[in-house]
Amino acid sequence: MISKQIENIKNEEILSIALKQSAEDMGCKAEDFLANNNVVVSFKLGASAKKYYKLPIGCNFISYGNNVVAATTDEVTDIVKEYIEKFEFYHCFETPNMCWLNERLAPMGYTVCFMAEYYLPDMNRLSELPCEYELRVLEKGQYEDLYLPEWSNALCSDRKQLDVLAVGAYEGDRLIGLAGCSADAEEMWQIGVDVLSEYRKQGVASAITSRLALEILKRGKVPFYCSAWSNIRSVRNGIRSGLLPAWVEMTVKPIEVVHEMNL
Image (cartoon, rainbow, N blue to C red; front, side, top):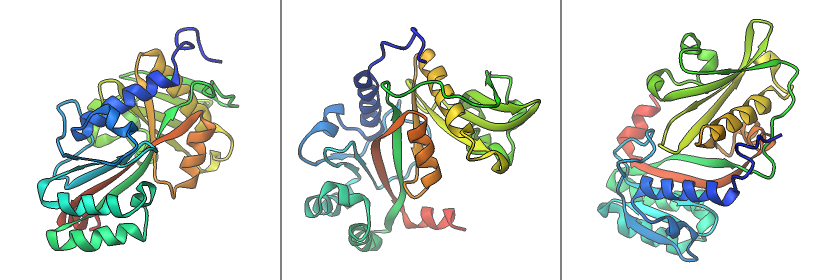
């Protein structure tokens, strides 16, 4: 059941905010993502870009399902243009075509790094889901002792200042599931979720995710959710929670940066 406070929010409004934010993240225009042709722009991380982006970035590819928008540094622009002209836009985010790109980026010291799918709430489906456990909304000051390994997806110890809200599922006084969100952009808060292994497959994840999404909307922000498309458990949770895939991203970074991540 969606409260009257947010029942008039439309999917179109949510998408518009996400498009504007993605444009700020890349240095393009929001309408570029809705064009029928691919778009290449010079990469510029805006002052209000999502806070998890870290330079250096050689190129960032985003698709909202219409085309590819590529924001690129000058040194790899020609390769990126050839890539998105050579392959169908949705194949630009998968192998074997990505191997073609990597082969040409490698001599220049770059490689594909991050790939992810992002979700936005579907206001026709989002609702508070049932849960056999007690759900509690946790405000700032109520989750400071929860920066533990078991809650590392819901809360980020490296960016505590961005964590703004959480929903916990409790069996008595024991926390068994936690959804938290970080204020990664002025108008968009990102959701992360953890459930203790022995409590999975009971609807806990979707209950706390959907409740947190509703709480975010009540506060005038847009919730979003990120998953690797190979993480089927996370994908299913997003969909069950009333969220739907909205856009995909692929980021190119220097080889040495990726190498350090793999150490």
